[in-house]
Amino acid sequence: MTRYERPYRGRDAYTLELFGEEWTLPVVAVDDDTYVASDAHLVLGTTRFVESAAAALADRLADRDPGIDYLVTPEAKSLPLTQALAAELDVEYVVVRKSVKSYMRDPVSVAADSITTAGEQRLVLDGADAARLDGARVALVDDAVSTGGTMASLDSLIETVDATVAARAAVFAEGREHPGVETLATLPLFVAET
Image (cartoon, rainbow, N blue to C red):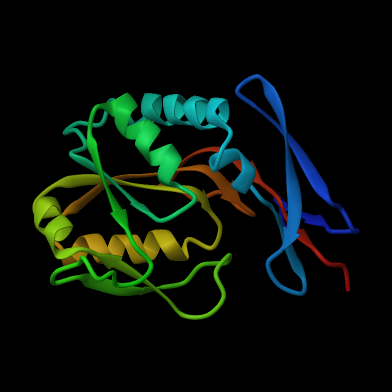
């Protein structure tokens, strides 16, 4: 096992300390042998957690020179975090959808791979948002980085629209550190013993 892997052994929760508080995350299966500490209830509905995470990430991103013009985030778990972070940094944000929507004109899309989403996935940017990002410096934001697949797909999408990735940020790294991504904590992966 690696530094950030732990034996599963039927564990149903994981507790971590962050922002001076203890947070309990349920441990859920992502496949037959791998389990993660799910941050869903923290990033979708725990206001003090989201605001604390946004403030901490803003401290890490605020001194980028040159600055950040936009935040770019995939839907859906990272939306509250990104909105709070955008307010902290006083920038706008763009949401990348996971399917083409009827309101979109000239959407731009790339294939995506995520540990938490089964099957083929796409990341889709409305053409109007693509035009806004042309030439911009952006920070990619997600709630967690596991395999790095979503971040890599966001990188590809941003390259397609001629923007520059100035930073990458997530509250959590899962299972390993991710150089090049600003994170606040690393969560273990829980692995079934064979």
